[in-house]
Amino acid sequence: MTHLLSFASHFYLFAAILYVIYLVKSHPRIAQVGRLSLAVGFTLQTVLIVRSFLGYGYTPISNLAEGLSFLGWLLVGGFLIVERFYHLPIIGTFITPLVVGVLLPAVLLRDEQGHVANAIKIPGMPVHIFIAFAGIAAFALATGVSVAYLLMERQVKGKKFGVLFSRLPSLEVLDELSDKLMRWGFVALSITMISGSIFAHRAWGDYWRWDPKLTLSLVGWLVYAALVHARLFAGWRGRRAAFLTMVGFVILFGSFVGLRLFPTGLHGGDFQ
Image (tube, rainbow, N blue to C red):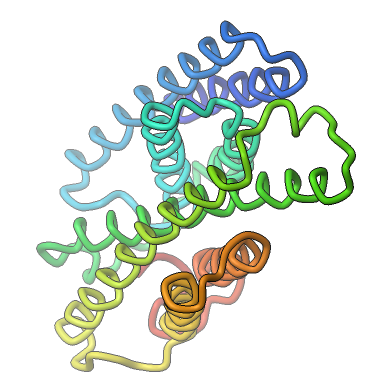
């Protein structure tokens, strides 16, 4: 089944190239073909994930490769939804390279077999895992939009109106989209933290332990909670919000890959 991931990755790479070309040469057909390529890759990956789920009987995320693959799949799905409602294909220029960057290690490590902990097989755990990964994907999308915002703002303030200025939407649109994606991610992360404490009690006997992954997740949650509060009550917009969005994502993604790089704590070296 791993060949499906390889095929999907090739479609994603082709789409990323097309979206970069679209940034330089804004022709609708280029974006359409790029979107079609993403959809084909997404369909192939969906088949892979469904077959793995039916074969394993639980969420097929037992190691870093499977986790990155699942995250990449959610990133593509999230972007396709955003593009469908906002009609901003230019955002694909910032999202599709991220998808390729996430999927590349998954393809290289796809033959690795991870230990599957019993905690993953607890009823209801697939929902918890899906929401957790969906939250990270939403934050990744918000980060991509934030990068576009900062680049656009730099051109506006420097009065150097280049390609980005003519292709990207207004700063207000980018800020609003980043805010919405960040809030969806924050809701997903909050649900993940609550449900995770329940599963932790069932698996370890405690609702909370100062495990490295849990601690980083809490720090990330606090960063985004502060950002939500600042946007609602302090009127934060623009550059500060974009930077904080990116900082929160780096922290959460660090807790995500840190399991593999620093295999300590209750979560071990994989997604236990």
